[in-house]
Length: 236
Image 1: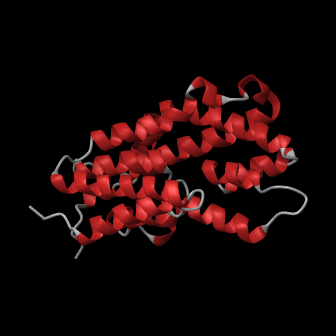
Image 2: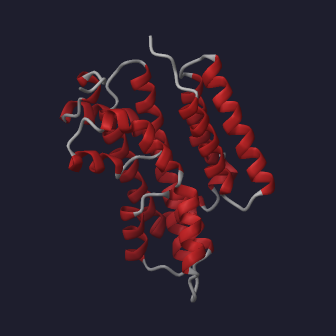
């Protein structure tokens, strides 16, 4: 028998639409970064259709930008695959944290939801679950909002990207970081969570200083996730 309350795994039109509307404001900033990616990709020599198809099928902004750095007449396949895997390895842990609720869904729905999981909708859905509220609508509906905004932004970047050539200069690169920090602050507050976040942060900083580029993402996630798996939360 499942130990998860079935109300928490509710996934219907109303919950998906609610999740879409809730993530729509943050999606506006995703559009801006999509514009920056569209412009950068066009300058790298990719044609318009390839850029839009990449954003539609991949939907991973950081790894798409990293791929552009390796793009050229001769594409190094192995370094490209390794870089993309390293940047997106955190999704392995996201899937693991979501599994107690996703396993209640049919297989096709389960993987359909995971196709649009990113940092923002994952964080908000986990917040909802921690409050004993349904979170799958946030996960899927919010993911659709973010995914759609990324595609639209990439397309706009092909034609209007010159208007925002450097989003970092406007401080827009801090938006997602501040959003996720707010999710952490609003989450559970106990000694266990504090130590897990400290271990993850310190591990990530050390990896950033001493290990290859982008490895800090994987190291921080693995260390925090491993400690969380070993130090299980006591059930009330």
